[in-house]
Image 1: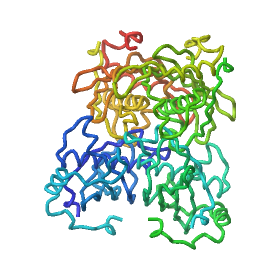
Image 2 (image 1 turned 45 degrees about the horizontal axis):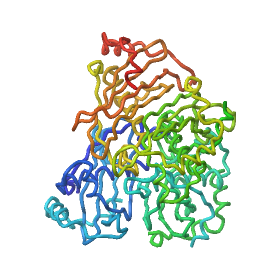
Image 3 (image 1 turned 30 degrees about the vertical axis):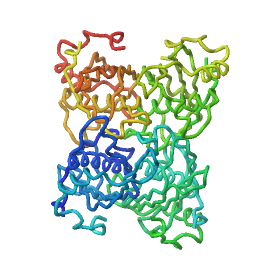
Image 4 (image 1 turned 120 degrees about the vertical axis):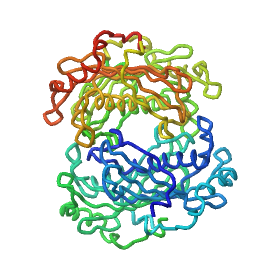
Length: 153
Length: 153
Length: 153
Length: 153
């Protein structure tokens, strides 16, 4: 299944990521997902970097889900595998698998459903065509082939 | 449905909760859930306050889910409604509804599945009996009556 | 000295505020300072609440300092005492004393120097006159009477 | 002056680092300092990596100071230059310069005073001799040569 995930974001667990129980706090995984999404859009969407590129992330998360498999700890090197599993007119879905380098363990899996929005007009908008084309090209044949939610849980 | 939620935690949206799009960041809702869980255990579980009470939260989140309904903004007064929807030998589930004071809007719903753990021994442990009894008394007849996941989404 | 501080913000230490060493993380104190500043402007500056009020905080922190006296822990009730110690044409200074309710201990002291800015034009601007007048009225005779930096350290 | 700083930590500004004004929030710089300190100890102190290495950071920040020169924005590549400016029996000082890659601008400067502590016994302890030796070797002739606080402001 992992070979469906064509994009990777590397993260080192920082002191600020762990909580009083010395494991990565459950809330932090959603920050990791967010970083992976932004990194994905930058790469797969071939958007420019820099301050202005923030416009490319004008989306609203509609649903967020994480299944925690093993605790990650301080100094762990994690890889966030990410794929876009479907893209429609205004909405899309990202799926994630977080793996740990030192033991190749799956740490967590999850998904996010998003809609593209115009923050100025406070309403949904069409997913930018150029971005959509770039993403479809990047995902190629794997897009839409796996609904896979049950497995990811 | 809301009358099944017997516990409330009040939160004011701080500047640090909002992101560059001037709405409460999607990840922050899981912090709000966490605060509500701790507040719930303190009240429903009738545990003592203070530094030592942290022992009462030695649990691991196994699943986390949030459905975002409306964006919350700076200075919003939110109420996190929380209930324990089931409690088993080592695991339990919390459900949440986040409402906004000024317009009574539902901002988000969600749930968390947890297992009780011994962090020293790194394994699951039985949910503390005294805490369990207190919680069952608190929830009374509503415990286990609503699986309700589909509705919460 | 504390009687010079006319404004107070109450904060309960949350699980997310403490780090792996089970004390409030050193960085969090600056979030507490920020919350106190915003709360101060809201009260002393008699500005309206709500999403739009964020315009009233268009300032840039130029310097930030904190001296840590005692560690705060989970569940501690803290009071952030705050005063504006001077206000000039475009700049001003806040001073803070953080005290703990249960033992009346001073947990930390600090200060922030700020300049008012127009974020759109990316330059400093005059501190809004109405806000300035309200603040001066609030601070009354104590404004500018204490430079006190050495003492606060 | 920068050549006195022998250690560097690279940081990319993440979406979670910027606030509603689309600049890196003032509080985040102290997280950047913290990351740089940990990275410094790991490298200069030649300590082992991994979960257990957290013991090597059992210190308490006594003072924290940051002077903000220019706002950093989303996607900026920052370098945290860090040096240990003095080390005594139980205390030591780190100094920082944060530079931005794209324009070589100084974004912020600062320092932290720390004492080494035993968290179990809740008291200060001697800075570990092996760590101290490694650090002194790393800093070599620059240690103690610059008090430099005024310049850093």
